[in-house]
Length: 180
Image 1 (cartoon, rainbow, N blue to C red):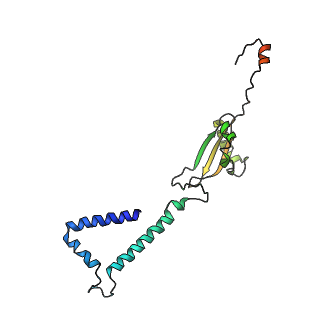
Image 2 (tube, helix red, strand yellow; image 1 turned 180 degrees about the vertical axis):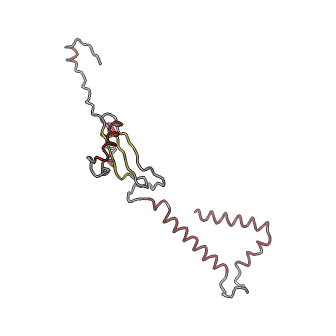
Image 3 (cartoon, rainbow, N blue to C red; image 1 turned 30 degrees about the vertical axis):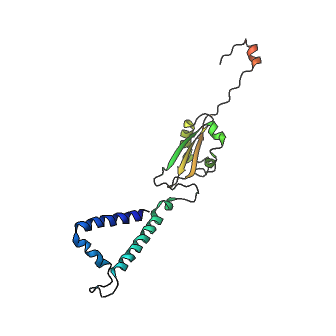
């Protein structure tokens, strides 16, 4: 699609130039003629231009294959192949988010450093524990160049017990006053 628009633009601009310069418009029939007395090889110039166009299209296709967005994707079928992805990502997950099961993909990731008890990452995990919400967790995701997560480091927040509702019998014994 883009190549055709480039060629149409070039052809249009060349036609505009040739209308202003009559000497250029006189060269067009000479390019596509088969009879050329100066060329001893006998190869018409149109076939040279055709070969150049084929070579140009093949080189554009090769560059697209090697350097295009498809080359940035990993083996993950959900990979987006981002160009400038962040190296890491911090996610704060509440208790409801952890229980809902929306984090199954993160749970399957390996731990950064090989194990949970790696002393090199203990300072970082302590910071993650401070940031984590109560009964939730803070997850530091390490990402590859394409943006897909490859490893995690997580810190769980402080455990808070659930509030127990006061029963009506306890309220009656204490005088019916509810001091919540």
